[in-house]
Length: 88
Image (cartoon, rainbow, N blue to C red; front, side):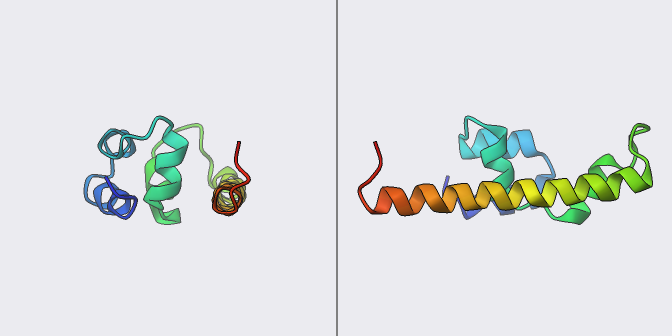
């Protein structure tokens, strides 16, 4: 599946594991990056969990955003290195 299809599958199904299988990603992290779950999706997914308090949720979302930014930077770096013929 093309990467552009992952967000559509995820938004329709709200099932990240199904999206992972359809996209044939080995890692769920890859699926999360390309599916672009919104902050609202993340909040909805964890709101009912007893271990998530409202103040903890805000902190975890900050860490999530940092993680996603770092993963996007890593993918960008890998793409630019591969484009320059420097990959191993």
